[in-house]
Image (cartoon, rainbow over all chains, first blue to last red; front, side):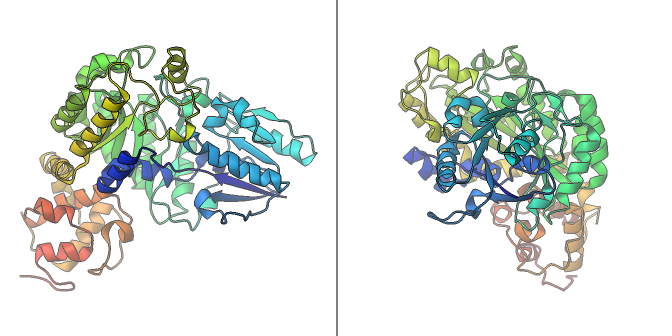
Length: 443
Length: 84
């Protein structure tokens, strides 16, 4: 038996003026391009959960044959996310028309199961752990059911855990290798459409499993830059220190996403630097504490906003850069917010900045609230869930004001002069904290 | 104390910054693609070179760094040669 696992990733900004900005200000889509070029850890996990007597073929959307052609399998599994889900449905339709059964899974499918079920022979909601092995067993006996629910807890414990099949990536030219050390995030922000939607609670992988995966992942590439595919790696500082202690001897450069509380632990910060952490991506969301009201159920981000500048300085002083993320168009935002974001970025010394527009991904609490408030378009807008296209009516400004404010801010933040200034600021930090001297003496 | 830049010393400096052997570098070697390093490591390399050789790399030269040869030119040395 031969199973094809197909990852549909990548986004295309729909608003014409923003798409044009992406050409002139490449910094503004850099992070999106990096994300789009990462392998699908979800499907590599599905591959690992497949019985060894079955041949598994991993494909990415760019590797598929041209229109009118199909690579044939006995069963096809497709994973995608909201912006590409219509392409995934179209591909599923082509396979089904050719007589090949199709299974759909992933975040969008989990959030919109009834919609997805119309385009597949079976869907998997949640993670693949606890669902895929049963699905394959049922398929073998001709009794595949229309829906399977994966485990939402204990996914990193045996018998549910499976180490992703990193060997399927051999020979591919990825810029980064990815490993997941956690799933979910306790902050539970209302806009979040990431891994917390497929878990009941924050799940942390045991250190020894995470380190073993990193070893397996970097063995497949000569580009040993590691990206942790987490939404909030250092929720548990004790776990974090154990992990970093094990990571230091591996001599890697790496990146992850976490929250600003890492700045409160100086020992952790020193270990981040010692382990080769080059950047952490932090969802600051807004420079104004007032703009963060209601964003997460416990007001965590609002409580921390007053300390953002101090925290960024403390992290970057170690030579670990911060990629500060801001969401534009929050309910607390006004037309004046764009200028305040620009001023905050200038004052903070952030090396990199990610600006996106608030996006009501279907199935999220934000989507439900805006739907109740009558602020969503009547038409289905999934292909515009790019994080750059505006799909809702903002609270304190018009759609036009939000779009023009974003374009103005992109120009202010992503122009070459400003980015160069931020790069020089980072080099100055390396001189000031002794890193440059240490590197200069290391050869 | 600063050091006189040479091709060999610069290659050693790069290996130290990226924390692994890079193999022999030619002027055409692209820093990010061929050495498989992140853009942030390029900035760390600039800082290390400034410190070791007692120079200041101008911002326009920093952002134009693409190849090993760009670094050699900045430091005024020929590939395979030492400068006294």
